[in-house]
Length: 352
Image (cartoon, rainbow, N blue to C red; front, side, top):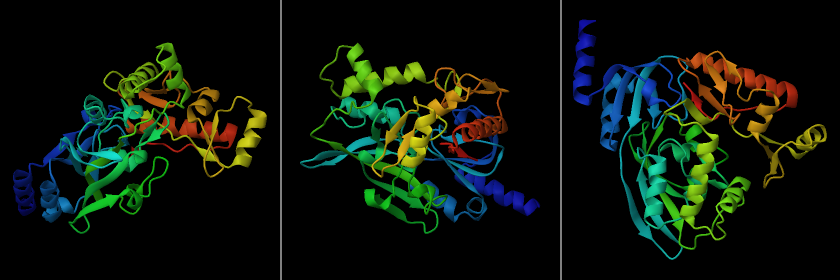
């Protein structure tokens, strides 16, 4: 026992791994949980050291960025690898696009602001999304008519299985709705270290989303530039969504479900106000927030957690909530939506 302790102590000293690390301020839901071990990652070299260390490489891993897409349901018995590298730069250009690379530990909204400050459009519809750049391709984040994959060029990632650096292009990532290869074949294996975006030279405004069009009209902006759209998105999100620094939350808690056309038509005959959007494959995406609202959950609490009073899609921590409190509310909402509409809601955050 004494020998094991000495080995662990030596590893902690060498790699600056912290033991029994409190995680409340490292997840935007503000859930209290303790990680057995925590390590701040600044480079690929840090990950290589972890991989080669027999103590730490043997533990379960949790890759953490901004903590905006995770529900800590209990203490974590493994090693948290917190990606903290920083930096944004233009790395190339051609006749069609300008290529911007951002470190995985960079704040997503900081990246959006940087592109706008440098006169580059393309990411403005994704303004004010919480979290870091490294999570963007994993989740294929999206909002107001644009998904991350629309602007994605390539990324580099560290492969814990082989110790190699992977370069993945768009076609390698299997992007889908809030989905990617990092949730499947590369889950728990690859750690995104930086992402390169392709920002179009011939920029066009994406204003098909009704809320943006309404916001621009209210501001009497007829020919919006990228900054105008960003400002509109920020105003909309600020009105609808709580600030995690004030009220703990993980943003949109459930994915908008996609169902076959026949099922949508059947629902529409019973619920004429059903909010749905046709997809390229003929299916329909439903507005999860509308479904939740119809089931009476908007603003309703279950213990110390609730569905937000201004946006039924957002689950909030009213104070002192545990991960199990979140799980209970999530399951209750899923059950009611299934009972009333026959539709399965899938949570967006990862449950740990």
